[in-house]
Image 1 (cartoon, rainbow, N blue to C red):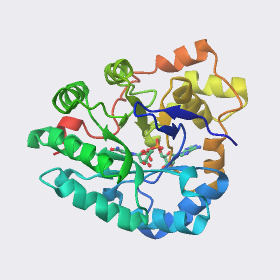
Image 2 (image 1 turned 120 degrees about the vertical axis):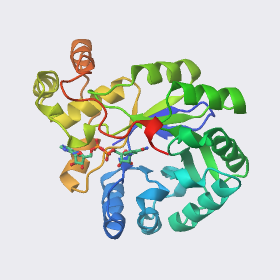
Image 3 (image 1 turned 45 degrees about the horizontal axis):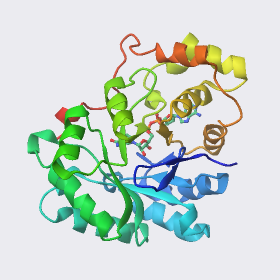
Length: 278
Ligand code: NAD
């Protein structure tokens, strides 16, 4: 199974599909990540706040997979934006992960009420220069937040990781990012299972037409739009299913029908609004 790679604006590349470990309990993470690596995943998305970086590190260490075949992302938590805290925070994450550097380090939320995300991102630029992360980016940033970091630091983040699924597409953020060379990563790519996305005709019909599951149809929709995904599951059969999305192509009409799902009745964000997380 070859997972396509996308080039980032700093010249590095990222596997377009990975495995996210939000809400995987710390004591199950080593097993879950080992299982994912065995199945063929090479890109792991974690965060300091998930409390499971040690499990990710243990799975990496016992995998025997060469470091340069893996793509590991972790994130700076909201209470560590100030002063030199980002450097201390990445040092702690690297110790837990058992790595000398990560592939991607993100400012997890902009926390705009504290007005410290520009400083935090400027510190990430230094961490990249110090060799502690190969690429840097942001998460949950809206257009005004992106504009400020680019204007005030002169550095364009490599990625912005945002809530994105057929019922919540954040088209304004994606369009701005596309114009400025920022890759979009989707968190909650399956909508976290919070409403019946899989039962909508657009998704169900596309899945039936290609003989795949609704989850595979949704993941394929993301991939064809150039979005990076890392769906979460701890079940081996779902991990295999979520990786097996490179053998079919949705038609333009199928993509357009899924595009039209935003807004679904009663849908929208499944997570918090970035202005409200501080
Ligand atoms: P997701 O959309 O990947 O949904 C995960 C849920 O979908 C699982 O609990 C599982 O029940 C279900 N699922 C998975 N595969 C399935 C399949 N094949 N068929 C049916 N159901 C299936 O949501 P997520 O885990 O929140 O997002 C993915 C990753 O994004 C996270 O693990 C994490 O790494 C990242 N994330 C980042 C942020 C952020 O603020 N940056 C927030 C949330 C998540």
